[in-house]
Amino acid sequence: MKVAITGSTGLFGQGLVQVVGKRHTVFSVGRAEADITKFDEVRTVLQSLHPDVVIHAAAIPSPDVCEDDPAQAYLVNVHGTRHIAEAAKEIGAAVAYISTDSVFDGEKRIPYKEDGLTIPATVYGRTKLRGEHVVAALPRHWIFRVAVLFGPGKLNFVEKGLRAVAAGQQYVVASDQLGHALYTLDGASKILEVVEKGPSGIYHLTNQGTCTRYELAKYALDRRALT
Ligand SMILES: NC(=O)c1ccc[n+]([C@@H]2O[C@H](COP(=O)([O-])OP(=O)(O)OC[C@H]3O[C@@H](n4cnc5c(N)ncnc54)[C@H](OP(=O)(O)O)[C@@H]3O)[C@@H](O)[C@H]2O)c1
Image 1 (tube, helix red, strand yellow):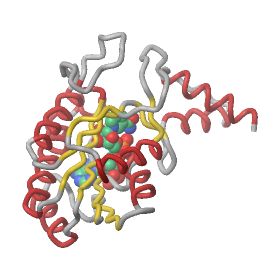
Image 2 (cartoon, protein in one colour):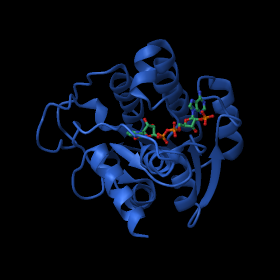
Image 3 (cartoon, rainbow, N blue to C red):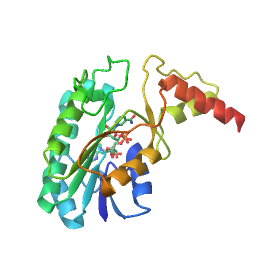
Image 4 (tube, rainbow, N blue to C red):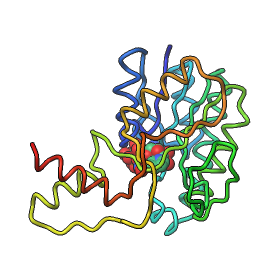
């Protein structure tokens, strides 16, 4: 199978390239290959690569950045996704879209199910939900909602904490948001499994157990202290 991966320089994109590349031909589609806000660039690259599947991980994933610049958030997260979907449809490629738990309001105390009511409370969540709707209109699609990501390849909040503490600095991280974290390489393996043989639809992906960002960073710190 030929698989194009957008956002391939990002945290999740790097994990996806690494894992999917072990079994399939992978094309990294970073910003250098196509700015997803420009349909012509997206179409040109997908027509020349002709992948069977596009895993669309490119986005502005920061809620703060989206809140500060909603127009840019819509341009990248909604229009960018529409460009991917339209270009994929033209070549008959399926699309796997990386989405987020931010499509929910976060008020529930128990895990959200795939068919749960989506009420995004932020610009980021609203743009990602619009992206979901775009992808869901395609004949072959998968929507993977993930929450807190951590993994190799790009500085993330766990690694930032380890580095700060190693440098004798204080590290402040949220302790009031309970969630399900996902190790990028585990997430990429599960996505690959679904893309290879799972039906179209929405999938919630997490590792087991719940934790706050603080608990996860502290756990990593304690483990590092032991090694
Ligand atoms: N990180 C999390 O905890 C988290 C949680 C839930 C869901 N997600 C979702 O997971 C996906 C991946 O997130 P991530 O953490 O891997 O993000 P990331 O590390 O910030 O990577 C984002 C990727 O998108 C690319 N990109 C942004 N704007 C682009 C544009 N206009 N054209 C082409 N490429 C563009 C970036 O390219 P450059 O490197 O060139 O900027 C980068 O490769 C996103 O869809 C996000 O919404 C992430």
